[in-house]
Length: 257
Image (cartoon, rainbow, N blue to C red; front, side, top):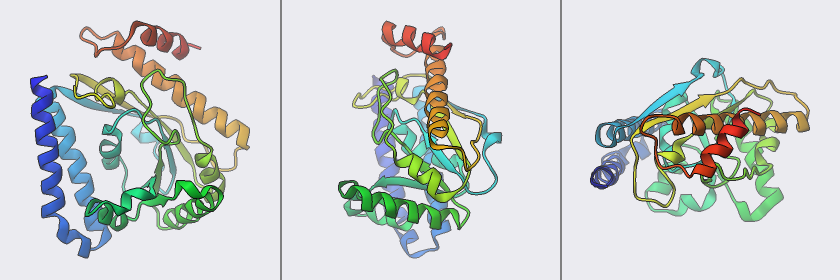
């Protein structure tokens, strides 16, 4: 608890300093601002390891295409929103439009040229999201989307929204599914941060043009099976984070199916 408190203070102080001291980047080239965003992520990853003993392991990074791609990621923790950014050369994060109205933070979202989605406008928002993503992949960027829309407790039933399928069909680039177990060590709505290793695993890319039903099956079953395997792997460690017994057993069973 003490380590978690110290980290919380360090995290928010560092984040505030990055925003205040980096505000000049709003007038600089976007590439400079993106480097600041990556540095923030790397700094917070380092702080989490130094203070809480929570490390990060990345598997399958060699599977990431050299050019633009669509990354469809599991979402379990606020950790995902900053720690995944440094893995990519020039990512554009699909985010809710309301974030851009937050003072300073929203200005940076616009500076990074993330894809801001107006979720209350359904069909029009989906069409605009695809158009924005296509423009950004045309610039060589990677599109990062959390298809469940919000953080899910590890082991919870999946809830994939169809937006990622529309992106895949509309932008015509490879898709890389991404599994993780971050929610075990940085739980949502809980103050504690637990020691151990957060594992991020990039799965085999799916080429463009795969039929919709087959694409959805490969993405969702692939991410869920890999994420369950990572939960089971963490549960088997000598000093695992708190994992309900039923979740650990279900993850073990689902990972082997």
